[in-house]
Image (cartoon, rainbow over all chains, first blue to last red; front, side):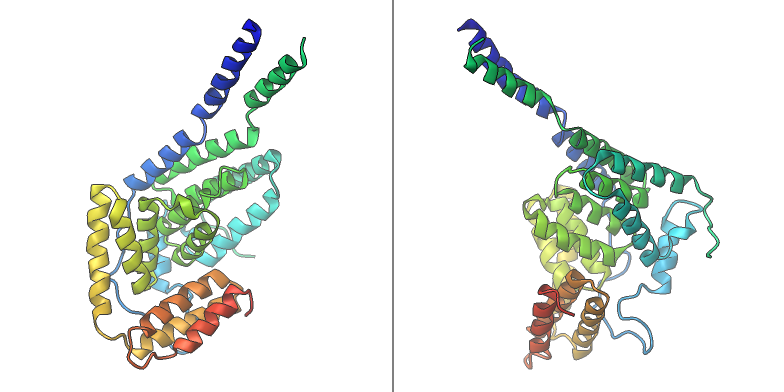
Amino acid sequence: MGLRAALFVLFLSSGAAAQSDLGPAARAEVLEALEAQVPVPSRPLALPRPAPAGSSAIRSSAAEIRRRAAESSPGRADQATPTATAKDDRGKLSQAGQSAAGQARAEEVRKNARLGKPPHQPKP
Amino acid sequence: MSRFTLRALAALLSTLAVPASAQEGDQHLRLGAAHFRAGRFEQAVVEFKVARELGSGAEGGWYVAAALTRAGRHLDALEAFAEAAELAPGSADALLLYYRGVACSELQLVSCAASTFELAAQSAGPKVAGQARRLAAEARALLAAEPPRAAIDALLARAAEAARQGRPRLAVAFGQEAEALSARRKDRWRATEAQKLIGRAGAGQP
């Protein structure tokens, strides 16, 4: 009986211990970071206007691209093109594949390699 | 050893075996948070995406969307917010709603901005709530007058282009904004078209 009771207590406490440092703490850090960098809209709110003839209705304006380049880390002008950056993310993540932690680690290695590259990459 | 004891030991061992992927996911969340705090928003996007892939929870999509907003990738952010709202609606923290409001605002989605900021203001901390209330009031002021047809035309053009580009969530977002503005006009300018577009995009049709 004593062994059963001890196992029962251990069972209950291990569940709590396994959860205590996971999830909630990391989430709290993220929310703290988000609160520290709360954005304000960069321009006055206005109703949309039709795009000029010949241009894409949802392509980012040249001004927005320049603003993003200025806001990003120094020397990271290669991030200016939003579509290209989104494609890069998708390419990396498709390579990361399913849930295997090893593939995600490989993606992390590729990410670190990307960060280590010089800021301006000549286009092929 | 009795059968009960064996079962209890097995259960105990299973609770101690925390999935490695969940731990790694949290590590990437923490890395993402550090990048975000330091203003390295593109790196934060990558870390939050990796965390989401490693199973840190569907709410990771909200963090990705917030980081995209701060990185100035507002179209991607709007898309990511729509996906996060589908997959993890319960994780819509007031702060994340505020970020969504900013993304809407940057894309000139006035009705989206108004309603999202109002929601955020209801339960956000004092600093964010104050800002959210002010921005919601600005958006509502814009919506007081009947919106011009040109605004609805512009939104429907954006929705159609998003649908052509295979981005149905964006198409739905622009279509819903067009529908909301149209509802404020006496003539309900292009309301049926907006509804059809939303229906087609929602069904995955171009």
